[in-house]
Image (cartoon, rainbow, N blue to C red; front, side):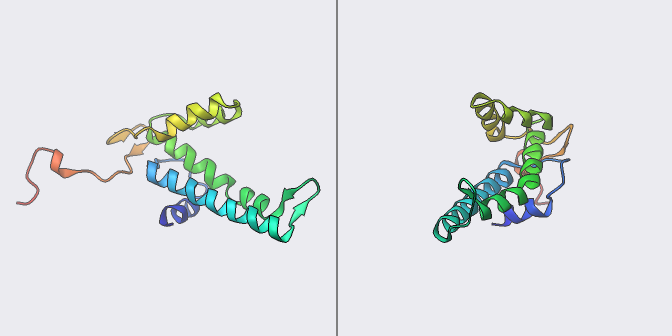
Length: 131
């Protein structure tokens, strides 16, 4: 749940990098919340016109900017430009390509978008840090 709240705190931050955990936990909790709101909409009949769910619509609009921002930061972690998010506009194949990009491990260390969000493992640096 902390990852979800962290993304909401950085709702309009399009620079920097986001790790896989941050992106995928945000996506998971967002889908769970959407599912719960769909159930509430169905039970209480909160519908507009042809069956559009009111609560789900408001929630989706509320997390639209944070979702785009964390997606762009996730692409930055893989050393890709945020414009790759436009692949979502291509039906099916674009989404599959983006899922692969978003699931790929990030660039270790620093890339052109900043430092890695992963903590540095000092045991592999080749020197003793206990002295």
